[in-house]
Amino acid sequence: MAADLDETDVEVLARVEQSSETNLKELAAELKLSKSTIHYRLTKLKDSGVITATAATVNPHALELDMLVFTDVTASHESSYAEAIGEALSKIDGISQVYYVMGDIDFIVISRVQTHDQLHTLIDDIVEIDGVNETSSQFVIQEVKADRRVIANMSDEMIAQILETDRA
Image (cartoon, rainbow, N blue to C red; front, side, top):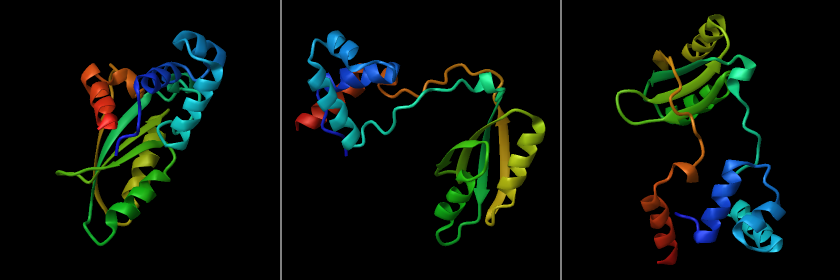
């Protein structure tokens, strides 16, 4: 279900998504709204779950986390396997994202490590999970685009669809 958003909400989201350091006064001036209106809208967006966190974006390369790895995980299809294996994968150090998917594989795991030894340990930890049958990893050679912003990556058509849905 889409959140109930209007054009101003989308503008607020776009600005906040660019930088969590934007203060209310600057944001209000940019959008020609009062600080109290901006505060109300931000609170509404947080309470409705549209904004889930306000945090700094850490450059992984500054921490020497230069090895970005995508690992396909195939598992045994037993009762509740997806939830149990997904939770176990999520607890492994170095893994930042876990996706349960449909197709020839069951999970896609995204991780960042500093060394080959750390990667070897991470893969060993994955394989040790009860129900995991097989893994296959791909190493990123060059990050062409790694932008996790939502609004900034939406087309005008996508934004219009949200605004249209909310008015219906």
